[in-house]
Image (cartoon, rainbow, N blue to C red; front, side, top):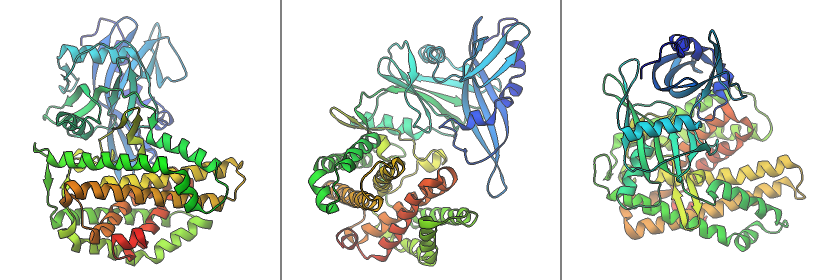
Length: 522
C-alpha cells in the first residue's frame, strides 16, 4: 500500500529502531511469547507490510526476529508475527513504545485486539487480493464463508496464541510464532468438519504469509466462536472447589464415588468424544491423514526425543537447589535413573504392539474442551507450539491424546490442592486434602481410560495396543508429557514443579508393573 506523502514517513524509515525500542519486559509479559525463560539478546525487523494508513493511524504487519542465548550457550532465533497499530498522540497504559515525529507523537500498540486491525483483515479477506511485503513476500487471504463483523474485544489470556472475540460469533486466532507450513489447527479443524465431525469450530477464512521461496506460514484464521458454559479446566476447578468444601474427612474413595458420579459421567462423555474423534481421523483417506503402522524408526524417534528431554531435565535439576518434598522426589527419580532409561529404551521391543499411528490432537488437555449446553467442542488442534509444523503434523499413537488428558486431570487436582493450601482457610489437614485429590485423579483417570478403551475396542480395535501392552506404552506417553511439563515448570513456575515430578514417579511405578490389569486394578 502506497504511503501518502508525509504520513508516518519517519516512523516507517526507522521501523527497525522503533522495534528495538520496545522494552523486553513488555514483550515477555505476553502469554503467547514462548521464550519467557530466556533472555532476549536482540530483536530486529525481518519484514513488514503496510495494511492500512490514513491521517490518524497506520496498521503494520511486522515480522520480528528475537535472538536468545539458550542454557547450552547457543544462539537461538524465533520469528514472530507482530501486527502493530500506530496512533497519533493517543497514549494509554498498554502501549508498546513511542516515536516522536516533528509535529506529533506516534504511539505504537499491539494490534490484535483493535477493531481497526480486525476490520482491515476482514476487508483484505473479502477483497481476496494479496498484500505485498517489503521483501517481496505476500500476505495471502483465503475466504471459505462470508458474513460481516463490526466489533472486537479480548477473549482471554490463557492461550499460547492471541484470541480476539468478534461479533457474529467469530474469533480471530493469530498464530504469533512463525513456523513453516500449514498450521495443524487450521488443517485438522477443517478436515474434521469436512468429514462430518461437528464437535469442532467452523472456519470462515485464513491468512498465509508466503516468502520468495514459496514457503508458507499460517498467520491467522477467522473461526466460529462457541457459546459455552466454560472450558473443562475452569469447569473442573469450580467443581473441585465445591467438592473440597463439602469434604468431611471421611474415607476418600467412598466420598468420591458418592459425590462425583455426575463428574464421572462427564468424563465418560468426554472419552466417548475423543475416541470417536480418533476413529473419524483414522477414516480420512486424504493426504497426510488415515492410519499407518508405526515402524521401528518411528518408535526410535519417540524414545530418543524422550531421552533427550529427560537429560535436559536432569541438567536443569543439577543446576538448581531444592529442599523438602521436592528434594525427596528428585532423589527418588535419580535413584531410579538407570531403570527409567532402560525402561524407555526397552519400549523399542514393543513396536509390533503399538497399535496404529494417525493424526491426533497433539496437545489435548481440559482447556481444549468447551462445555456447551449440547455437549462438548474440541479446540486448538495446533499441537505443542514449540515444535515445528512437520513434527506437529506427524502421525502418532492416539495414546498421546489420552496421556494428555490424564496429565490434565492430575494438574486440575493439584491446582486445587495449591489453592486450598495457599488460602489458609480450610479446616482440614492439608495432607488429607492432597490424598483426597490424588485419589480423585486416580478414579477419574480409571473411568476415562476404561471408557475410551471400550469405545475403541468396540469400533476399531487395532488403533491402540492390546491390554497386555497398553499400560507400558501409555506410561511412555505420560512420561513424555510429564517431562515436558517438568522442563516448563522448573523454568517458569517452580512452585508447581511437584506436579510433573509426581507424574514421572508414577510412570516409574507403572513401568515396574506388568500389564494394564495390574496397573489399574492392582
